[in-house]
Length: 262
Length: 151
Image (cartoon, rainbow over all chains, first blue to last red; front, side, top):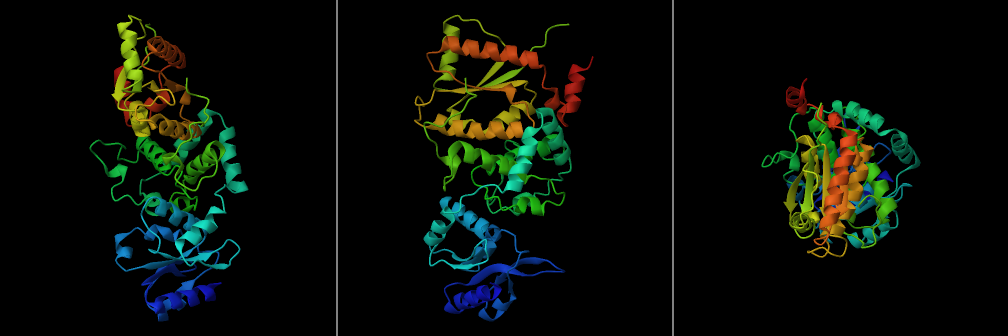
């Protein structure tokens, strides 16, 4: 699998159309990190194994990466979902990116264009794994007071480093709501109120967009299980609106059913 | 000791519920004075952050109201809002926020009597729930809330 990716990257870079291949490379210790390969002879640095979990789509909208020229990206299904969503949000058009797909069973996929990637990923609906669904159900089973206490304890650790935001491919706004102070939407300090508001806002702004890659949780230095929030929303969207490939909160059906509006 | 009077913020749309509330007044229907109405162009404009702000500023309850489905002045604002509320309400509940304190309703411009009923019911329910101390005791509200309500 790794050799195939290296070979593909070499071909793309030699072809001249693709200027940079975004993939995984050896990091310090036993870790892998993102690498930006710009020369065909450097393609050997690319790595692909079980440690390569980071959602590399986070780099695609960045000015620094765009300045390098047309990218090719090593993409597992969550990355493909992120690219599909970014395309839906008009961040990219057909032909802007080349995708070196890696399926869940380790096959290297060849996508001639982004349309074929979207067709592939549309066939894999976004659902929670049994473990994730169980974790969400465990919280659902608590009383409201217990849930409040749980989240107060979990979010009290938050230092508002915004690593969750920095690692998220969907958090690409040049100016985030937390940076707006006219009006000041979110309390700035990392106190109870500020943390609660931040985590609610983050989850809501990702509603219908989150691809559940888990990078927010993996990158949280305090291991706050904040992906539970977006997982709850993914479950809700699946239950209420069905599987849709586009941004579900930008769409509606007149027959949407709810039971709380008087 | 005087009965607890809840503070309720109502976010309403300009075209239906605000006009409906106007009708309540011109029809001389009396209703609880606990509600502070904030008029917005459309329910689609009611950002969830406005609701968070209301709680952060010490509201005990919130009413969100707009045009009935299919009656939106802008055709689809309330449909979008409905989806957003479905997701938002479930998220708040998941985080342990008391969603009984957020009352959603559809009140048309002709339903002056319904508006009075919505407000009166909301006041009754939220009075029974008591002040939203859980939220008010979060820092940084804590200090001001205590100094105001101590003893």
